[in-house]
Image 1 (cartoon, rainbow, N blue to C red):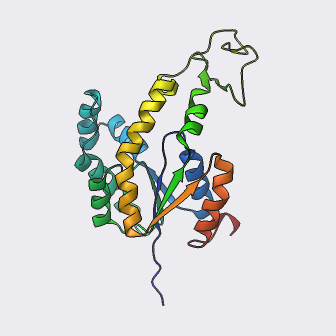
Image 2: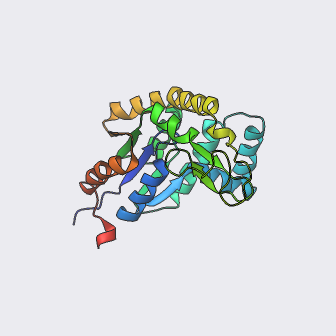
Image 3: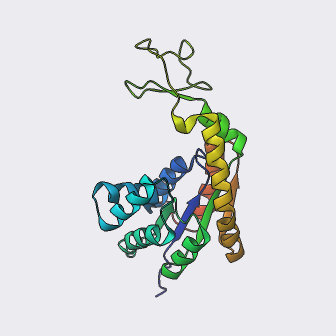
Length: 221
C-alpha cells in the first residue's frame, strides 16, 4: 500500500493578477482546502483573538504584521487541515516566512501568476464604483452609459483609493520588491511553476493542465 502524498500548494501573483479567480477554480476542480492569509487575519482581528489583537496593533500603526506573528497564525490554521490537500494564498510574502512554512509543511508546488504590470494597472484603474449601492463599473468592458455617472441613480461614481493609478503603481512595486526573493527561493527548491499571460481565462487552462498531472479532477468524479 503506497502512502498518499499530500498536495501542498502556494499561489502567488500581484494584486489584480486574477489570483482569486484562479484559486476558486483550483479549489472547485481539485477539491483543495483553501486558506487566504488575508481572510484569516481579518477573521482573527474581528474575533479579537490574541494573535488578531497583536496584528491589529501593527496594522493601526501602518506597519506590516511581523513575520513571526503572521507565520504563527497561518501554520496553526494549516495544522487544522490535517490530512487534506491545500492551497495557500497570500503567504509567504518574505523569505523568513517561506523558511518557517517549510519547517512546518513540505510545499510541493508554487503557482506563480506572471501578469504584466501594465495589464494589471489598466485593469485596476478602469474600475469605478457607485458608493451608495456598491455597483462596480469597468471603463474597459462594463462602462456606465454616461462617463463617471451611475446608470440607475445618476449619481457620480468614485474610484477607490486602492484603484487610483498612483496607488496601484505603489502596490505593484511593493509586491515586486517583497516577492522577488520568495520566488527565487522556491525556484532554487525546484517547486516554482510560472504561468504568464494577460488574461485569466487564457492562463487558467495551463494551470489546469499542470495540476491534472498532480491531482484528479474532483469536479468530474
